[in-house]
Structure formats: C-alpha cells, structure tokens
Length: 356
Image 1: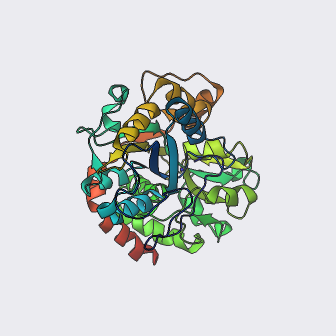
Image 2 (image 1 turned 135 degrees about the vertical axis):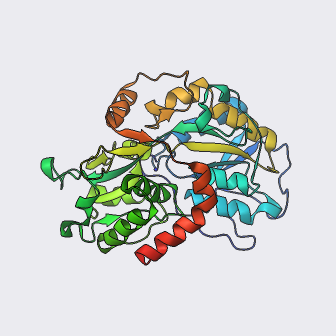
C-alpha cells in the first residue's frame, strides 16, 4: 500500500467545500481547459510524507519539464472512485490511479476514457485494459507486515492460523474490504488460500476476535506496527518496503495456509484518463511521463516498487532486495473481472461473517 508515511485522510466534500490541494473554484469547468494544471486522484502509497516518495520526484520533475502543476488528492482506492462518481456531473479529476479491482470498477462506471500512454506497449497485457482505458504504472504485490522486534526469530508469523492465537488479541488490524485496495486484497487472498469464499469467510470471522477494527487507509497501519501498537497488519510490498526506511521494525511477510507455500498476487497501481477531464491534454502528458523510462527507472530506486514497463530492468539495491522478498512465494492471478462485478456481494458477505 505506500511512501514512508503517505499523506491521507481526506475530508468528505460538501457543496463547494474544497481541499487546499485540490481545486480553486466551484462549478463545472471552472478552470480554463488550457490551464497549466493537472489534478490527480490517487490511492495512497506512492507519495512520501517527507517529500521523498516516487510521486514527489515524479511531480517535481514533470512540473519542471512541462510547467504543468500537479494538484494531488489521496485516499483509499474505493474512496477515490466513489468521489469521482459523485463528481460525474462536474468532473474535477484529470487522472485516476487506483489498485484493482477498483480501476476496473471505475471503467464500468464510465469514469475513464481510452488513452494509451507512450510506453504502454511495454506493459504486460494482464496489467492494462485491452481497450486502453487504464494501464499499470507501478507493479506491486500484496503482503502483510509484522513487528520484527516483538516477533523475532521463531516468533515471526508464517501462517494464517497463527493469527487467531490469543497472543494476537487486539494486536491485528487490516484495512476495510471495499474501501481500501489492500483491504479488499485480504479477502481475495483468503478466498484463494482457503479454497473458496465460504471457508475464507469462516476464517475471517474467527480472526475478528483479534482484530482491532476497520481502517479506511492501509498506510496508517504501518506506524502502529512499527511502534508495537499492532503486531500484524496488511499492506503491500511497495508501500511497506518504502516505509521500512523510516520504520525499522517493519517486516514483510506473506501468510500461508498450514503446510502450503506462502502466496501473493500482483496488485499494481493502475492509471487512467478521466472521462470529460477538465485538462485532458495535460493529463495525457502526465500519463506519458509516468510511463517514461526516466520515471520507471525511479520506481524501485525511489518508490520501492517494481517497474511497470518490462523493458526497464532495474539493478539498484532496492530492486535486488525486492526481488529477494518475493523469491519462493507463489504468485497467483485473481479473476479481476469476476471480483469487480461481484465485489459488492463479496464485501456484504464479509460484513456478515465478521459483524463489521
């Protein structure tokens, strides 16, 4: 999910209330279409609290190169899609960046228009829409974190079943499925690992006795794990690896079913051009820049993630460490179309099973 600690916690907008980092006027196309600005709605995880994340570098370099100012709004993947839906009659965002299955949902809700950024031909087919509505800009994997100071050596968690032990009472938290991309990923991984929705929900219902409660933002959980307030939380490799530079007690791991190999799945940050974007031309330039060789080489070096372009082979120290993290972990491919179409049902069933 990601960042040192990303900027988050957006207040809900009412009427013409505005955030300082977003828009400057109320109404339809309030800014001239040729204004030197692009507004990005994004899932958290790629911007650093201290100005040292991938987005921080990309925004700065893009603004220097083009003179186009980046206005940035951040929240959970589901939160960003919901906000864009509310604004369909008065579109504010130019670019939308979310994790799956929310990028697919954004497309289904008519929020995206086709645009294939320069360099997108080098993105694997599984990581982009066939009709050009969206493409991955940072590759990533789902994972969990634990406090490696409190859980040293043999105490380090390995399996799902361990997490239901009384030692984890009120020491586990995962972000909310249906709201946060990484929270939805908990449900997806559990369904895979336990062999179906029913056994997965039965397990998550049992886990609830140790769970602190819901969280709209995954990134907020890492500081709690680092301080020992939590022992285990969900996250993703890119976000948590970036956070671990300032949070030395974070350990990344992948829960396994007892007797099985640990598993994960790709959870890329995917970007699309917003339908009726107020600054469409600027948005296209921004998407092109995200997939430029320069920005893609910086994904691991600065952002702690994996380049989306397959022709960019990072060899920096972060890239080597990231490859080692996922070595020996079984990678499966979710059916994103099914998940997107049935997400509401999945989330409702999760709520029933956990009493959330």
